[in-house]
Amino acid sequence: MKLKNKNLSNFIITIMKFKFSLVISLFSIVLFSCTDIDIDATTETEALEIMSQAMQTPESDEAIDIVNTVIDDYLVAELVKSFEGSKVGSALAIPKVELISEKGVYPENYVIDFGNGDYINANGKTIQGKVYYSKNDKLGTIRTYRFVEFFINAINIKSYRTINKKSTGIIAINATDTIVYKNGDSVNREWNRTRTLIDNNPKPEEYWNNSYEYQGSSKGTTVSKKDYSMSIEKTLVSMDGYKYYVSGVVKINTDKGEQYIDFGKGEKDNIATITTNGKEKEVKLNWE
Image 1 (tube, helix red, strand yellow):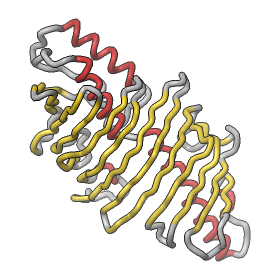
Image 2 (tube, rainbow, N blue to C red):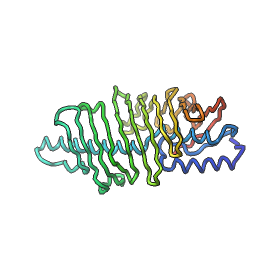
Image 3 (cartoon, helix red, strand yellow):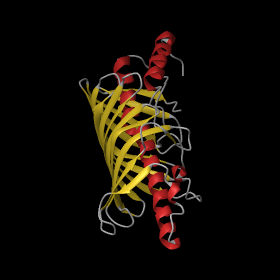
Image 4 (cartoon, rainbow, N blue to C red):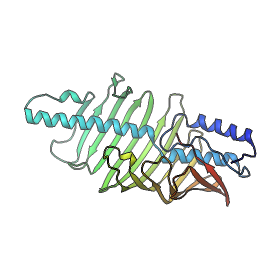
C-alpha cells in the first residue's frame, strides 16, 4: 500500500520498536503500514501498544513454565523415592521445594525457593526468589501461583495467577501481573482469559500449534503510563499455530474513548482494522 507520509510512518515504526523491545512475544505488534493518516497517529499507536500488552504475558508465562517444570521434577523424584525407598531422584529439583501443608491432604501447598541468584535453568536464565504454589486435587484441576521477590535475568515478576482446568480443552486464567524491567520501566495488568481448544494438531507436545478460541478482558497501565481497559467483544480465534488471529474483535477504552480492533473473518492474513471515533483504518501487522 502507498503511504501518504513516509517520514511519519518511519517515525512511528521506530517508536513502536523501542516500546515493545522488552515485551516481544507471540502477540507483540511492533510495526504497521496503512492507507490513511487522517486518524490521530498517537491514538492508533497507543491502541497497538495496549493490544500488545493486554493480549500477551511473556514474562509471567515464562515464570509459570519454570515453576511447572520444577514441580513436575520434584513430584517425579518423590515418586521414585517412594518406590525405591531411597533418596534417588531427589536432586532432579535443583531449587528447594518444600511441602508446607499436611501430606496427602488437599489442597497441597508448596514453597519453591530458587535462592539468591545462583540457580541457572536449562535455558541459561538466572532465576531467584520464591514461589508459593498450590493445587486443589491430585490432578491439579485448580492451581495457584504467587511470586515473591522473583526475578528472571533481573526482570522482577510480581504475579498472582489462578489456572482452572474447567473441562477437557478449556482453561480459565485469572491473573494480576506487575513486571519491572532492568531500566526501571514497568507494566501493570489484571486479566482473565478463557482458552478453548477447537482443534488438536497431531503432536500433543506442540500445543502452540493447536487452534483456540479466546474470551476475556484486561485492564492496566502500559510502559508509557497509559491507563486502559480491554475486552474481547467477539471471540478471538487462532488457527493451526498461525501467528495472527484470523478473526475476532477487541474493544479498548482509554481517556480518548473507545477503539475497536477487528482481525477479520477467518482469513490467514496479517490485516486488521482499527476503528476510532467511527473512522476505520486498515493496518498491516508484523508480529515477531
